[in-house]
Image 1 (cartoon, rainbow, N blue to C red):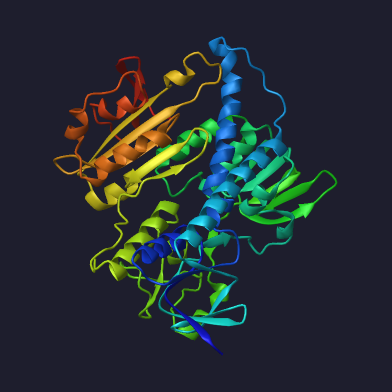
Image 2 (cartoon, rainbow, N blue to C red):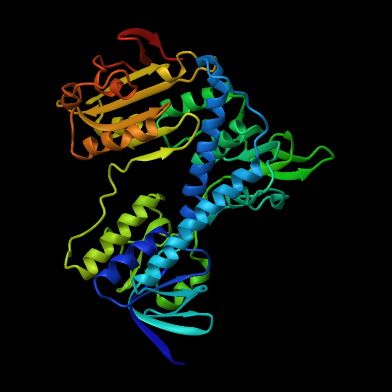
Length: 471
């Protein structure tokens, strides 16, 4: 069988695969991308991009609800779901078309289909074989559907983006960031929503302050929050789909149930054993700090590595890998510390660095916490109040800022600059010496002066502070 040879083959046309392919092609290498679906991967097609469009729609719905309080005549009707979805899909199609053209103009060959390893230098796609000195696995992940009775009655986040009609009664199973995001969007657009989480609090991996505030905000908005429920199956009744939990818990009834219980790497069909690549039982491909697998010349980046499952992280890994391989930067590697992230909830959540628990485990008593909670000016006249809460985590005698955790209106945009400060090792004194922008919510991060004891927070109001015990 004849084999077509490349310098680099990227398996996966998502954020990571496109990033490494782009940089390799710019270095004059012969490059191919293997992708069975639309270019852009999960982020563009079933993740970040369509999610953010829906989040903006939900924000506008909230704004209409609040408009009359500011003297702006507005009244909300039923969401035109079909129009929203049509506009969203047009937007995504434009991004797909951009990547199709960019890949072609860059001289990157696109191979349509699923790749399977033949050996450490060869893959097979649709019966044809291709070899390369460097093969990069960037196949991303897919939603998990738990093996419980009636699981097929539910849909995943992929299924959510395929909905052409708005469901009226929805159960979202999963208390992580996907479950929280989808619950907020659906509720804001007019669905009746119940979120069901196995853990005792939503967003269990985040700082507890964020969990407390987002759960309170979601309940205030009318979302039913059920925590500590182990779902053992779904069933059908005359009224709709029933979510069944342990200890005879039945939560009913729903038109739509969405599984949001996590994602797993897309590695099952790659035939990694033929190439000798180690893979963990959960599908994760272990790599070192330079994205090398155990087989020389085979690399893995993005969600398949079990590191941070974020689009910018995959892009950084792809670009950095290409720099190391083709630009003479032998020491180039991604720094996975202090990576900022946002949960596009309502209100949004933004975080960078250590949680309070992680900081105390590492630094012990040498941790100082600054925390504040207030109602932002955006809601000054609104009948629908919303809380903003902020926490600075500092360590050592010089109070280096090792963590920032925010929830509230606009925090998704404000964190990026503060993340730079954390990355550079800024101290609390650096924050204090920065003149605030007034009036803004962000100014609170540079005006908090008094550290709090565990169980306390500052309540900011106007230009002063007053104490309030944390609930």
